[in-house]
Amino acid sequence: MLICLGGLFDGDLFVRALTWFGGKTVYSGGGFVSEVKPEHRLPPSNPTFRGNLVVSEGTVSSTAILSQSDGILLQELPFAVELKKFIVEYYPTGMPKLFASDIVIHDKETGESKEERIEVNHPASYRGVQIYQSSFDDGGSRVKLKALPMAGGAKSFEVEGTIGSSSQITNGDEKLTLEYTALRVINVENMTNDAGGSGADVRKVDLRQALNSRLGAADKTPTQREMRNVGPSITYKLRDEAGQAREFHNYMLPVDTGDGTPVFLLGVRTATSEPFRYLRLPADEDGSMEGFVRLRAALHDPAMRERAVRRYVLKAVDPQRPELVEQLTASASRAVGLFAGAETVGGRQVSGLQAISDFMETAVPEAERERAAEVLLRILNGTLLELSTLARETQGKPPLVESEATARFMTQGVLALSDISLYPAPVTFQLDDFTQVQASVFQVARAPGKNVVYLGCLLLILGVFAMLYVRERRLWVWVAPDGTGAKATMALSTNRKTLDADREFEQLRSKLLTIP
Image (cartoon, rainbow, N blue to C red; front, top):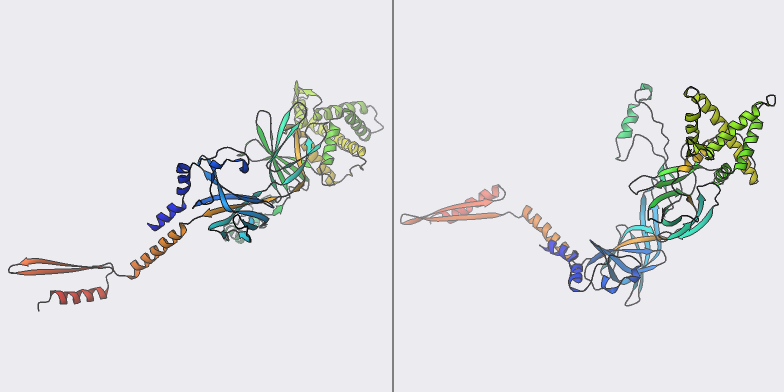
């Protein structure tokens, strides 16, 4: 009974009573907390409540949010919480290991200030209100983004904003809203490059290793995980004028996905229930996107394509066979033009490797397609290499040296140039700089009924031990008339059959039923 009574006190009984009889109503709108009217605010004298308090670093807050089924209520606290610093530590797997908040509690009535440190399972208490470390969030980090247009010929630009806010961008014809969603400073990913092995090959079967990898700790897996922090990332949304939005997740630094080519990962998804799909842009020797951006801009410049074709033909054609110059020039121009999307195929405007494939299906007999495709791709790769060299010369950079790294860069660059036309946004944003501001999420609770619950639990424990160690005995004596006298019958009941119970029954029988 006491436990139920204490639970009733610590529930939302008093909150509901204030909404029923105190003139308070649930707030279901938006906006700033300071703009919420008094009829949606509960007084500091509210005897019981449980809500969340979000405080950013360097700020002060004294209003908790109480979630209701149809909105929220604001609970005014008798004190204000100032967050001096939020501390979070991580395990090597990227999971948070420690949440800690260094706070200062300011009493509204006395003006007294008290410093506290709150950790998970180590709350602070002030004036009957318990302050628990619940979680953490972004407190309005400032980010600087560099916009990379996806269409050729456009120029890049920079935007600045705060996480949780938005900016308006336009290209003249289309207006978009850039919503800054989240900033993640640490991204620990499993970078294991396991090709796997077949258990059918007895030379690769190790029974002891197989058992050890599957037995023991619950988190063991048959493969060893390589956890690596791949650096900060930015998550944002681009919303069109109709209100439709796509979510994007871009990493700030290039990531080596296992093939030795560092790439910039640009993620996109149309719904939060879907996983991100990533476009991979190769990083140049300086670890930036500039090399790919120069190559992309040169690909969409007809004059640069023509110069690259001439340079490729001069290197590829034997001077002893000048009759091949015109033929190779036409083939190279056709290949790079199709790849850039400058020519239509079958009445459709396509680009990338898809344009090459469509052209082969429409213009080359099926029996010759494999050989023709191999020759055309070799011509395309050579022309794009010369195009990259020309683009670097315009920026005063030396040409790429022939090496394995250059080959990997060009291979990934060709794939990225082919896929970039499928990117569902006219522009992508790369995280250029940021100033992180963290926020701590506290759970504040006033629970006067807990002492009643503790008392009920204590009595419950005492009752359990009493049932175990205190014997229960019941004695019945039935007296019935018997002729001129009476007849007595006696019975004893106990919850445990012991020798003491039998001895005690005999003593009672001899004292009560023996005729003097």
